[in-house]
Picture 1 (tube, rainbow, N blue to C red):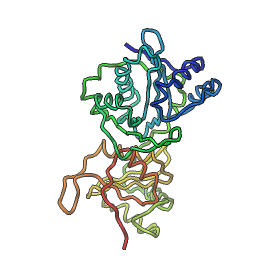
Picture 2 (tube, rainbow, N blue to C red):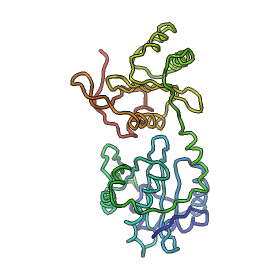
Picture 3 (cartoon, helix red, strand yellow):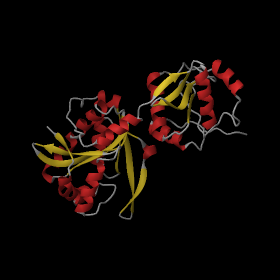
Picture 4 (cartoon, rainbow, N blue to C red):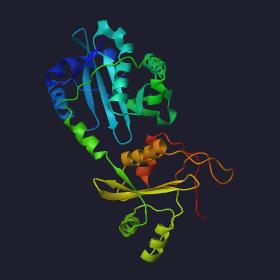
Length: 328
C-alpha cells in the first residue's frame, strides 16, 4: 500500500510547502521559517545525525507525506517519531501509515519502546495511537511555548510486546537508510560486554581502579585499601557481579544482590548507557522471590541525587520512583 523513500535535497520545496500549510502546522510543536535555503541545509545535515532520520511516504508512486524518527537510542532501544500527510486529498490515509513504521522499528532497529507526543487537541492522533496499542505516559507530559501560547504536549508510549500481541503486525515495508551513515556509528558505539567477576588479580586491580575513579558514591566515603578490597572481591556477597567493557576497555561494573538491589558504577556514565545496562538486567535476569520485610519482588536501584545520568536513564526505561532515602 505504501513505500518509503529517503529524503533528498530536491524534496525541500515540497516538504516546506507541506510543513508551512495551516492544516499541518497547527499540529506541530515548533514553527519553521518559509526559507527554502534553510530547508535544503537541514536536509543535508540530517544525514549526519545519529539519532534522527526521515522518509517520504509514497502512495501509488506519489509522495503524499513525511515521516521522521528522532531520539533514536540503540542502547536504550527506544525512539520517538512523528508523521503527517501533506497532500490534502490523501489525508484520509494517515491512519494506515504507522504500523509499517512500528514493524520497521521493532524488527529492523531492535527498538523495544516507541515514544510519541502530540498537542492535547490533536485528538484524532491520540485515538489512533490508542488503537495501535499505546499507553499514556503522563509523567512525560510537558508544556511548551508555541507562538507565544502555552500548550500541553500529551506523551504516549508503545511497547514492542503490546504491539506484537495486536492485529497490525502484517503491515510491513522497507525503510531504506543508505544515506544514514551515522546510524552505523551509533550502533557500533552501543556495543558493550559483560565480564563475570572471578576474583582474578587483574580483575581486583581493575575494580579498585574503577572504584577510585567513581564520581558518585552512596555506600562509602573513603576508598578501601587494596588488601581490604582484595578480600571483598574474592568473597563478595553478590548474586552476580560484572565488569562492564566497551571495546575491551573497562568502563564500570554492575552487580545484583540477594535482596534484588542493582548497583551500577561507571567511570563516565551517560543516560543511554545506563538505560542499556538496566534493560540488560531486566531482559536477562528475574528478581528473586519476595520475602516480606526482607526482599521486594522487583529489582531496585539506590541512586545519588547528583547522578543525573543514572536518574535520566531510569526515566528513559520507565522505572518507577518508589521512595526517597536520607542519611541522619
